[in-house]
Length: 215
Ligand SMILES: C[S@@+](CC[C@H](N)C(=O)[O-])C[C@H]1O[C@@H](n2cnc3c(N)ncnc32)[C@H](O)[C@@H]1O
Image 1 (cartoon, helix red, strand yellow):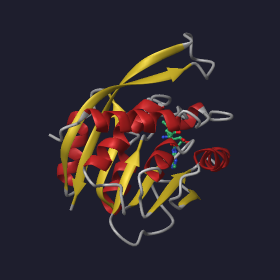
Image 2: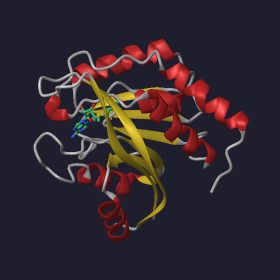
Image 3: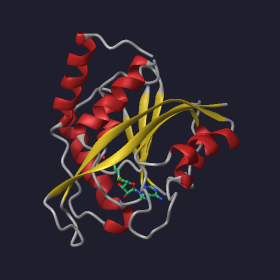
Image 4: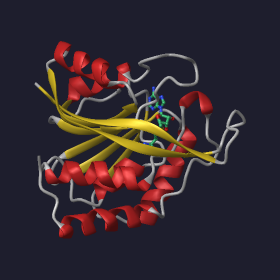
């Protein structure tokens, strides 16, 4: 387990603070599960990836990039390049606007495409970060499977956010696809009310974050 010094904690906090300028989805689509990743969670995941030397100098691919939260967190940590893949054109526009707010020096490329069928291949094994749809809207359990397939094909290592109770599924998927889960932790995912079916102003959803290495 990596030791986290107070200095590193401050760095993680400062990353979360910088991500505070990232705006949410302009017109969120429930069918695509357009929930913005909370800045604290994105900062935590990218900070952890940085401690594992999985960001600096690497190609980072964000599958289901949405507002660009993960892409921009990575862009602030010295990657060779960041590629954000997002299906929804409006979200890509929002991500580009957020990129201007963050003003990271790393090149960020936005691709409007289906992350389960990426239209390009990547020059080298990448670090994938992703917060895929969980399948909560249509009862499509393991909707994140297609994203994991892409990660297994193009990543040397991946960091992914899944709904609580996914451990068996993720470990079995990794074992069947030349991967291995190396780290896992639980986290809260604060969801603001943004769709008609939301009855409370905000709620915390239990999620799990996995780091996996791929052969
Ligand atoms: C839970 S959100 C996470 C968004 C992003 N991490 C953020 O913080 O803004 C899931 C994202 O995946 C996108 N998405 C859903 N299905 C997709 C697909 N097949 N290909 C690419 N993106 C997809 C949604 O539009 C949404 O932006």
